Length: 181
Image (cartoon, rainbow, N blue to C red):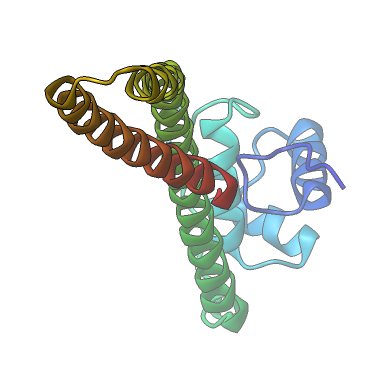
């Protein structure tokens, strides 16, 4: 159910009824409106304040004195309505804060994922290069009969295998991190 007057924390039917009464008699007092709608004068006063803020009724140009009547003295629903309105406002604020936090978190995740993908894109060709160098060195070692040359090639092969293992482990870590999200 969509609310017609979203910025006013009162029922649309109450707002419509209030507007109707004011159109019929623009000089009507808050107390008279309250009586007609079976609400407290302070509730009507708060409602009219919201309606003025939203431009539904014109601002008061003069103060209309209200006669005091004993029946206006106690209205227990006032405190309940005020508490309810305060709670609604607090929940709206908390909801908005949570939405902002979620958006920030989602943006951080997107940036992190992009960084991971960039790093993986950079590492994959290096891994292929190391693999190719390892194959070349193994082939050279098999075809070399000079002891010193073989020793030198074997040392280089060990370095490239170590680099290959490091790169492969880093890539696997990055891939598993992406999958976990």
